[in-house]
Image (tube, rainbow, N blue to C red; front, side, top):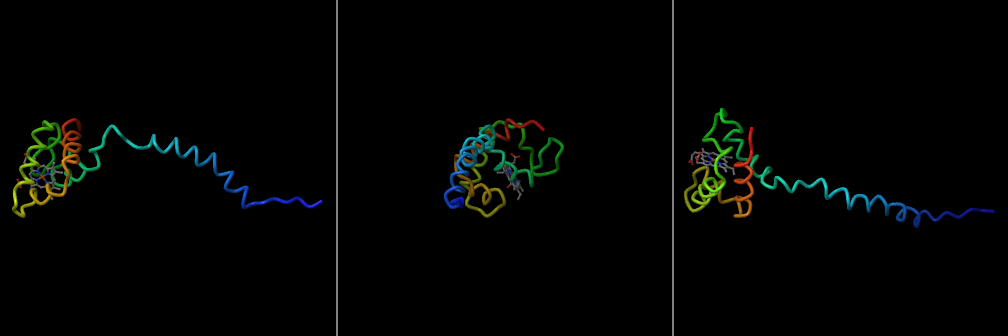
Length: 107
Ligand code: HEC
């Protein structure tokens, strides 16, 4: 007797539990707590992370509203200085997220 095994059917069915696992597990890898972290990491290139960092002014630990307003003021400045050009690249939502992260972060 010859056993028939239809691999084309078997393989997709056997992937279902793996795919189902992926659906539940991948969502836990997202980090909803720190939405501004990745955006804020850009600021550290010039401003540093710590109180003692060299750079153009400390950002960490300052009030989120103050930082947000500073970025909005920079956005309204039509010059091609570093910060005005930089600030224009962010949406309001992104500015809120990154300034809140900066404000809450403790080195
Ligand atoms: C390419 C370097 C560079 C990057 C990246 C950068 N800055 Fe700046 N930033 C500067 C320089 C230079 C100044 C000072 C000159 C000026 O006021 O334009 C400054 C000034 C500031 C000031 C005003 C000074 C102060 O300490 O209050 C704020 C606020 C600020 N940056 C926020 C940010 C934020 C938030 C980010 C990230 C989204 C960021 N910067 C990214 C270079 C940078």
